[in-house]
Image (cartoon, rainbow, N blue to C red; front, side, top):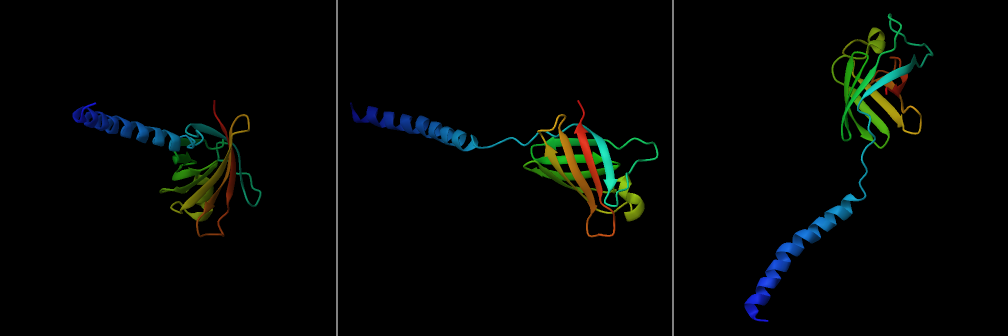
Length: 153
């Protein structure tokens, strides 16, 4: 084989082999990634109570719905007149209110009180279930509200 042909073969191998090796490396690293659980949809609240054992029911008698919008691990949650922004950590959700507090906490803690929503996703339950707590940040005198919501099908 002549020297120019060998040089062309080596350049071709580098220009084709390099990207192929890079692609195989990326696929190998990505094979360990797992998608977060899908939470983005409507959830029906089945229970809502305070730490004092008081069942919280609005004047109309219906419990507030929980609406989740999801982009990967990032979430936007609407619950009881409040909006939350947060993220998933495995099967756990942590979000903080943006603006108004949920109606169930407004009477005792004020409308503009920052609230944290923490919930756990139970994918083994049928239907899927979210169980969590609403707590006012930095105000231990405010009641905590515990909720359970089921996926609406």
